[in-house]
Length: 342
Ligand code: KG4
Ligand code: ZN
Image 1 (cartoon, rainbow, N blue to C red):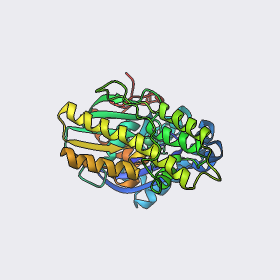
Image 2 (image 1 turned 60 degrees about the vertical axis):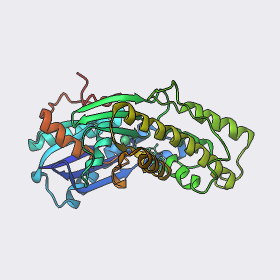
Image 3 (image 1 turned 90 degrees about the vertical axis):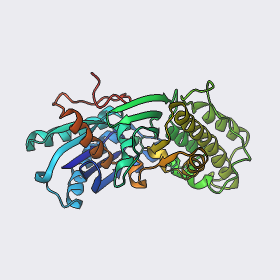
Image 4 (image 1 turned 180 degrees about the horizontal axis):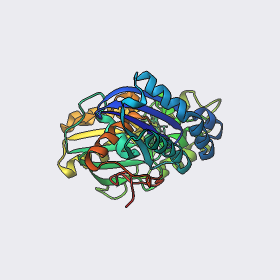
């Protein structure tokens, strides 16, 4: 079955055509990040307007690149949450319209579950059970995934998400938005040991995260040691490397702890921060030491995309059938809740 996946939860407008939840025929992503850059973060109103400008074009391109017509599509899957309510509603309204006009079944998808599902796109993916480490711009979570419809939240962030910490620290350093890729690049040139930023582990054995303290620590450091120029010299590289190392330490330690505590030997990452080169390297090292099998989505499916929504939607549909037209945006949807709050 060909599934059309639509993703509009934040600043990416994305659509994809995926066969049987696995094989990606096309994946088109258009980001409005250029329009947010001057504000240093996503402006919801701008994101929402760009979604409605682009959704039709992006969906048309996804179908054309897959050499498919709407008549070939068997299901429309759309992100129902979490995300920005206005942005989500654009995708949901568009998907409902397609569903109604073409008589196609419609299914809502949980964006966070879709990020972990990305591990199964164009590759075999982990067997169940596995621990999912999800790190994106809005969320950080550890999840025990026992089956396609059995996700148990083990821990999540109490304040800033991992990607949010990267974005905020990049802003403090005068780097561009989104900050993750900038810090990744700059940090690779810096000394990871020179500046020791705090690692927040919370209580012993806790699988929750907190990243707001490290952001304040970087702010305090920068007030005492202002960066010259555009924040891209050697001193800035050390700040980026030191900050990145502190975040990565906590993510890697807690992911390994989650596997140990649950007796699980498979770990799968997902979300925008899972493309981070230092995180990938450190997870590989730790997985080698602890005998864990490690999985990442292909790089094109780590950041927001429609393929993960189509893939996840295929399984939602197989397991629980279609949604009705009461499907709506759920801005604070949690992982493990599927696409609707009952
Ligand atoms: O999953 P995603 O596309 O959107 C959300 O669902 O939030 O993740 C976007 C986040 C942003 O915070 C961005 O800075 C971060 O992923 N990111 C990175 C890298 N590339 C993107 N963080 C660290 N290193 C990267 N290379
Ligand atoms: Zn995302």
